[in-house]
Length: 99
Image (cartoon, rainbow, N blue to C red):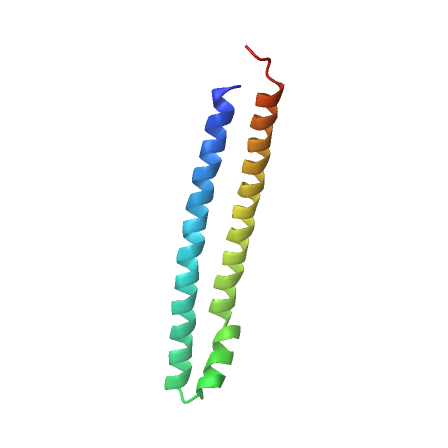
């Protein structure tokens, strides 16, 4: 079994961890963005429910969520690649001649 394949899997796992952290941070940022939009709407005189509805369709919030979805898809691709790499390593181990 090649060390390069093991190292590649390790790199993929690190990239997945970084993407997962980024997505968690974006979730918090999205909450703050939405809250900020709601506060602006409330200060402009909107009711609480109207401010919440407006925030959900605000262009900045929608764009932020769209980018988050793109990043989640990229992370899922990394997960699939890591799983395939892991499977290849397991298969190589199973097919390796016994010493």
